[in-house]
Each structure stands twice: as C-alpha cells, then as structure tokens.
Image 1 (tube, one colour):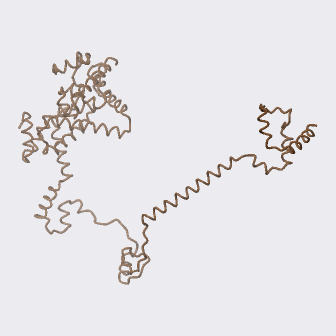
Image 2 (cartoon, rainbow over the protein chains, first blue to last red):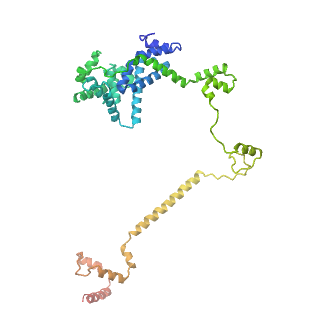
Image 3 (cartoon, helix red, strand yellow):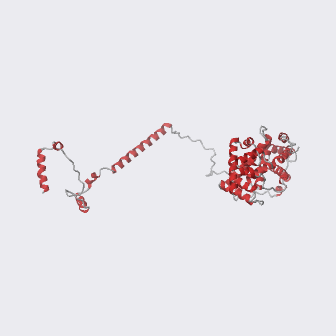
Amino acid sequence: MTEQTTDTELLALFREPATKEKAFNILVKKYQERLYWHIRRMLVDHDDSNDVMQNVFIRVWNALANFREDAQLYTWLYRIATNECLTFLEKQKKRASVSINDIESGLSNKIRADKDFDASKLEWKLQLAIQQLPDKQRIVFNLRYYDEMPYEEMSRVLETSAGALKASYHHAAKKIEDFILNH
Amino acid sequence: MKRLNEIESELSGIAPVLGKNGTTAQPYSVPDGYFAHFSEILLNRIHSESGLFLKETDISNTVNALSRTEFGDENPLSELASLSPFLAKLERKTPYQVPVDYFREFQAKKENPVPSERTSVYAEQPAVSKAKLILFHSGTRFMKYAVAAVAAGIIATTTFFALRNTSADPLSSLTNVSDQEMANYLENHDVHWGPGASAPTVSVDFSDNDISDLLSNISDTELEQYLPDQKQNTN
C-alpha cells in the first residue's frame, strides 16, 4: 500500500478492520497537502488551518466507511474541507460579533503579520487582494486559480451550477486585478 | 507550477494583469515536518477521542469482558483498586450535612406516626361525595359574547350622543343667562347695535310680489298696531 494506491482500493482497505488505519494513513498522506493549502488560503493562519484540517480528517474517519462511490473521493474531501472552512469563519464572526468587513480586515491583518510578509511581492499582494473577496467568491477563485479545478468538478464540490461559478470567477478575477492595479 | 493553457487563456481574457503576471507561488510557509507528522498526530487524536466517546458496541464488549474475568462478584473496593488505584485511595466521605438528630427523629416518627400538617398530596384521601360539575357549553360562550357586544353598543351610542350634545346650539344656553349679565357684557365689550353699527348688513331686494307674499299671513289689525310702535321707537 502506497500513495499510488487508487481511491477505490483505499476505500476497500479502509472497510477492513485489519487494514483500516493503514489505509487511512495513506489517504491522509495522499490528500493532506492539497487540502491544507485549500484551507490555509481561506483561513490564512497556520494554527487555524491545522485545527480545521484535523476536524476535516476526523469527519472523514467517521464517515468514510459509508462513503458512496458514485462521487469522487477527492471531490468529497474538498467539500468537507470547504464546509469546515465556512463553518470556522462563521463561528469566528459570531464569536467576535463583528461585521464581515471586520473579519476580512482581520484576515488582511493576519497576512500582514506573517513573518515572511513583503508588500512589494506580487504573491503577497495577490493574497491581500483575495481576502477582499466574499467567502464563496474566494473559494471559487482559489479552486480555479490555484487548484485548477474544472468547473464541473467545482460544481460538485460547491453544489452550484457551472455557469454561476464561471460568473463568480470572472467577478473575482476582475476585482483582484483592480485591487492589484490600485494598491 | 505550469498553469493549464485553458485556465491561463481564460484568465488573460478576464484580467490580463493576472493572466500575464499572475503567480501561483505560495507565500505562506508551514512548520518543518508538518506534513510528515500530520497523519500520526491525527491518528493519535482519533484514538484518544474514540477512547473518550466509546461506541455502544465497545461499551458492551468491555462490560462483557469485565464480567467474564476479574470483576465477577468481586468486592467493590478491590474492583475500584483494579480500575483506578487513585480513586480507591481517596476517603469515601460524603460532604453533605443533615439536620441534628434527623435520623433519630426520623426513626421515632416512623415508630409513632403523628399526623403532620404537611401531608403528601399523593396520600389516599377519604371518599367525598363529588360536587356536580357545571360545564361551560358552547351556547353559554356565545351568550357571553352577545352580552359583551350589547354592552359595547350601549356604551358607544351613549358616548356618541353625549359628544354630540356638547356641540349643541349655543343660543339655547342663553336662557340661563340673566338680563343683568347680558347688559353688563354689552357695556364692557364695546358691542355696537343699531343703524350706525359697523357690522356688515345684508341688503336683499324684494319684489312687490315677495312683499305681498310675506304680508299675506299678517292681519291688517296687526299691521296697524305695528306701525305706530315703530314710529314711536324711531322718535
């Protein structure tokens, strides 16, 4: 069993008590980086991202045995991760009893507080620009721009039509361009 | 990372700045060895949490295993010592207090029961002839609404007429005013009467026919009596 093992094989192994942990271990290793960066780009902070990552995989551990193979495992994992991110952000908003703008400026502040932050570098400017977007638009942009996810795949993750996602991505890209040109 | 042509050309069409100069480089960093150890940390957490929240099957398996082996009909103290030596060492003392002599009095009361003021509501009561129940039927309820409606109607009508009377003809109240009071008022309030008064007068043109109509109901005797009176007044 290696990271090259297919998802179907991993699922079959996970359902066997003797190989359950081993299969899960491989599944985590296979998807952890992609999911981590997806989460990190949403939450910015590593500790928050680590908490959410662990919650995502605990959910996976609890539900994987009942996973229906009519959907791709990769899509399902992204959906869980996205929902966990949104739940986390929602809780933060409620806990702080602040407006969405405050949360966004909070994320921007977190970016500026990063030890490697360099305002002159495009990659940091891009992150600041992305944080100006509403949560769902940010997810669409990240999935397309960084993960190069096809719209059909994305529509299964976000349960939104491909047309709506395309429109959302266009708006997001325009806003980001404007931000970069004006800052 | 080399971007897919499809995505790059799409982005160039929407936002040329991002398409041409955009970067997918990740500016964030992660702690050293984070990904190498993540799955181990995760599995440890899963194990510790599954220990805290045992499933029903796990609980029944544990109970079965325990009953089969060492804790069959064992002394509770030795059972506790096996499960948790720490708890077994603790003094088994209840911290709560009871009123002085509570148990002695309780025993005495049990032996010589005295009727108390505080009897249980569940104690058996002697059979009492039950009073006849009078139910409110739907007809009675209708009657209540009807009476309420009539009462509201009476109040509304009375109020209406009472308010209306307040705006009655003011001349009617003049009957209560004495002549002396009227004379005083006219003297004090510069009121002008008579032909030289500045009050506007209304001139009406009467035709001969109108005059003959008006005077048709007045007898000649009354007219004869009126004319000398007027002559006397003008002099």
